[in-house]
Image (tube, rainbow, N blue to C red):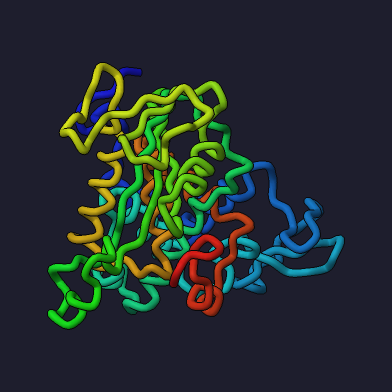
Length: 325
């Protein structure tokens, strides 16, 4: 199907339609169960399908496994595990996050669904966790592939005079490097927080995400030279941004959305959690052509096997090995 400006071909979902779909807590729970247990209800403890309902004796764990004799709910083994929040609040949080191009802040979410700001922040981080994928499970980008790096974080002009003087001559100040790739054929994006933008790092990222026979487009950064790919670069240092099919406009548009969200919605990305935000924006970009309900279902399906506790979230720096925190 041909796309159109604003993705008007995509079927949206209004808040009124959403509330009609989920009028009760039971309807929301059944929706989660239908997605997480799409192949049939099974015990999260032992995997057995020999399960029965508890007959209403336990709202927290309404099912019983006849093999391992454990009680369970659909929350177990997902990012919802340990959450006392109603399923309807999770539905609303997922909806608000997925229908906001630049994401939703924890301050807005806490007001919209009636939870504390701390709880809203934890909910959003768990929703972002659902987008996490193992690179080995992702097919390589067939190309053409645009690759670019950017820096996210503070600015020298915002620093005090003493800090600015101390940082003179050191390049980007209080900023973290992120490298990204966008496949023009599939229109998918992959992005990763990195420790540096040297040749081994950037070319290693490309090797991990681009097919061996893919055409790769970059700017004229020296770290991209000598790649074992069919490679073409545009000379940004000479104000050359497009030459025939050679450009990085697609991945730069992705950076623009990320940075507008940084400044306009979140105001600050902690280096500690930056990879979660980068993964979130890449994940939402990759499903943006789906209908709204399909996007929400994609999130729920990605929740399985990804429990995230608050303690682990605060302890995890979310960065690749060796990156600063």
